[in-house]
Image (cartoon, rainbow, N blue to C red; front, side, top):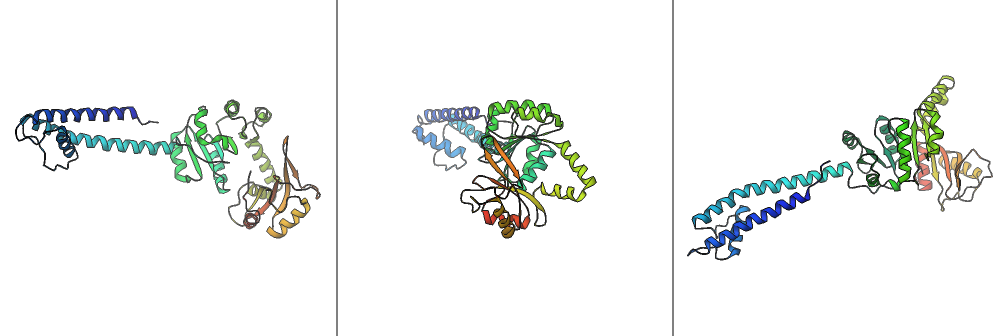
Length: 351
């Protein structure tokens, strides 16, 4: 990535000042000694040079001696180069600013977003679902061609892109990675992912990490390395395939509910955090179950409680379980239920 060379620009401008300053001094020293000269002071020489290089040419001041006119010719001809230089520098500066912005070098103010490190078709598929669910995503890639593709399909207020080497952890902070809700390490193979996660944890230890694995036997290794969630793509595919074989209707529904509901007829499972002012704070699970079914036509299927050890998911718990602030309700719903729920809670899904 080419960076603007401000030092060369400063040197060039300084050189122009010296060049035209010398012409002004010479014009004054030559013309001021001649009777009838219009350049009796250096201010007259400055006025003539400025009027000439700006092509204004008032004609009120001009050299009358032969050496003075030669200096005038030099001033007029050099003005063409000056304009070319100025226009070129402005164009180069604007192009560099545009390129820096496209590469993400200006950083982003995204918060509670998802950071995807590494870009491929699978990452694009994941990001499409995240954007559909209303999440903002920061993509870090070392492939320059990927930047243009991402900008073509996604809006700047949804996706931020950063062109960087993955091991340049100082550059990763431009993606505001410390404020991310989770980091998806989307590299090529499991070994590369493991080594990278270990190094990444040294610099950003408090973040949540998720990886997909080709080898499900490495789940424990990644969890010991500090990865929050490990997903084996082959394992999920195998389970879904087996389900299609002996319970195809369940498999179809399972595939539907793990993705974002794009229209009112599709179903989805969402988790929604209970805030302190939520009407369900302090109520029992059974009451929340029936109230949500009645008001929003959604089905409460579990509750997640946070404790010192982490998160505990209570699936279809006892009716007497009490709901506290900061708990997460896990709810199954269609598109209509989702809109009703947003109006009811005044919040959206997700962590």
